[in-house]
Image (cartoon, rainbow, N blue to C red; front, top):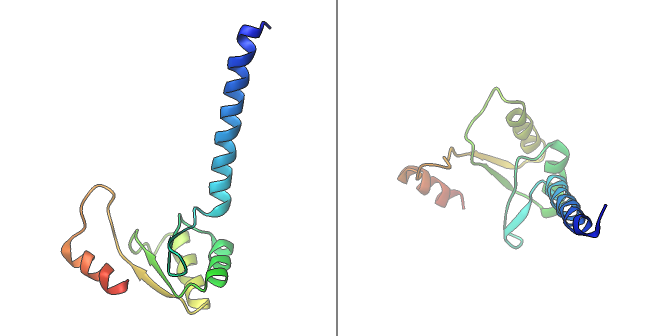
Length: 113
């Protein structure tokens, strides 16, 4: 292989490995980040172990689920169970990524916060 091809291939491999590492990191973190230090946090959907870890580590007192009630979904059932086991208040608000929330939903969010 000539030098002319080695540099672009090495660059592509480096970019692929960097991107892969980033996505593995995000997955391992549960995409958990502070919104306001020591007050409010956001995350992707967490599994039981992640929920329990973050509840204990950050003394979480309430969870706001922005996907609305999903009583037949395993993730939702688990989220409610973990919340109840740790005395964490659980709120369900249904938001859309493509539509503005109704005024009543905004009021409800303000009240929760």
